[in-house]
Length: 425
Ligand code: IMP
Image (cartoon, rainbow, N blue to C red; front, side, top):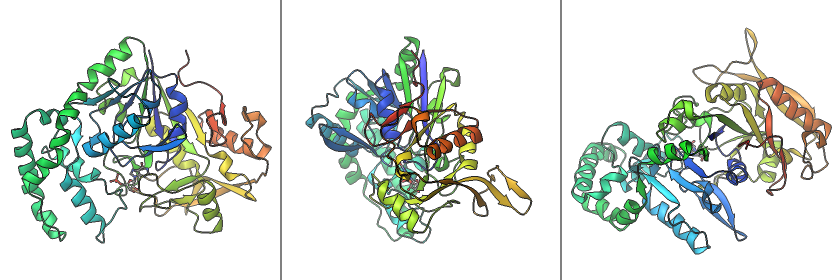
């Protein structure tokens, strides 16, 4: 068997899309295990861009099965719009998408509550896709699961109970609770289609592993947005770390062989919350523009900063990362100098440790690297990089104790240094 998890090591948007596209060539199955339409992965089909939020990124590889695990929250309207857009561009999806019977369904009141909260003073800067309220219902044991779609009377009773529970919250936020009928009607048109994709995803993923297929678990968001290990409360509501691949798809930890962490050569974050190496200056703006750092779901400008080694060491620990994919190194081309935070300073001295309760008080200490002007896109080995770019890669490897197996040096698929394949067959 060959199984690998690909996980974001920062705040999401690490360029997972390109890395996952490269890796899925050799993957027989791609499994998403957490999150929902808050994620956005830009695929290029026939020269046109499509952003998929729910369908796993293996969809462009005709041989690859795509599984949406029970750790996910699914907006059926978004899902079927995505599938229809893929089909309209000639991507055959029939028989290739599996939707877990236990995945939770995002309903109109989840979107309403997310929107109302974000309009208030305690906003998190969410994607307003209803993610948080849907997971809240899951944990409160009043969520609607895909399997429930088979019984219309069950849908109505679950929706009724959830609406009653949320009504005081909605009113307190200045909204008007939705009616049961309207909510039920909103999903009625998708019910049969969803049931057509439904299966016990755990059985399917386990079967693929047993028949020695290459199975890729595709994380969503990034480590620092993980509900347990991220910059709480400025996090998403699901596991973003590699461990979530097990609970979110229904397989055990002994089945996972390899965890690849993805990090940009700098850092970005969308939404509120601490960001020790943030750049609020012209250099930040320059990186934002040259890196195209605008949200693929919301279009928001992303906050930009320098790479943060203590956070990468933290991500390596909590995910068990055994190789890095370093992305967007080329975006730094042309800067006079490049900084990398190598430690945090504190009154007690330097430390590499990330404090358990927040990053608000840390002061990053930087190592400075010379800039370079030669484009990187032709490099196919780390040794072929300009000395300073190479030094940054080696510094990341040494400071984290994790080797770089992929370094992306441009937008095109071919603009990639591959030191070692993810599936070593
Ligand atoms: P939510 O997941 O929409 O509830 O948003 C919670 C936090 O996670 C916000 O800061 C979002 O900007 C962030 N977030 C959620 N999904 C992504 C993603 O795919 N990339 C980057 N940030 C995300």
